[in-house]
Image (cartoon, rainbow, N blue to C red; front, side):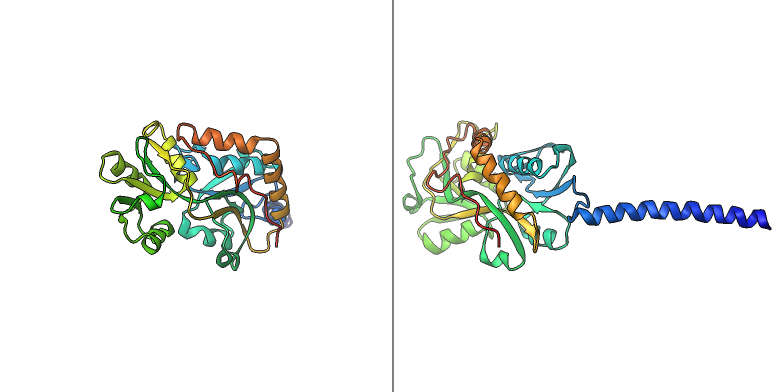
Length: 280
């Protein structure tokens, strides 16, 4: 009986050590303060379907948003191999942050007062504007040239709504995605595509589109792309410092250039590079 009791005690001790080790891991994760559960790793939300910004090429991620995310993560002490990129569709971004499924989001995420009610922002790290993508030989220079012409945008987008509200004479063609718009323009069915300028630049820079299209460069809105953070996050100041450093050491400029190469695109130099706004 005594041997049996000793054996049971030994098993219990091993179990306790195992649970303690697991518990220690959970504690360390909570101390990391983020969804990733570790101070030296990050889960970052990006778009997976926007060439030149956030694009999933079979598990290899590219684009300007991705480059900025990697730079910021490095400045926060997290190496590239310890970043987990998570798809962050527009409609799910607030939920991903509120449910702590990601630590931060770089996904053409415009800073707005409405969004600030539920999430925090660092940045902006880029200021985009609605613009037009046209064939390289087009003489369209802005939305005022679209009267009676066919313009494509995405169903339900703010870009499409702006055209309906402000340019009723334009023949708006709506598609499920911008890739479909570009395909239609390549086939001569439409005259222009509209959304944020840098998104258009990414589409134009795709290898299959190189040399076929150009961004007009006449923006008619202002969209401040911020880094989405969970409400109450303490990372804002450090992220702003990282963005400022990226701009100062020219890595920001290099990221813009490399991700829009072949698009005949120049960003709005009156708005960019931006100065990050004070943290709330």
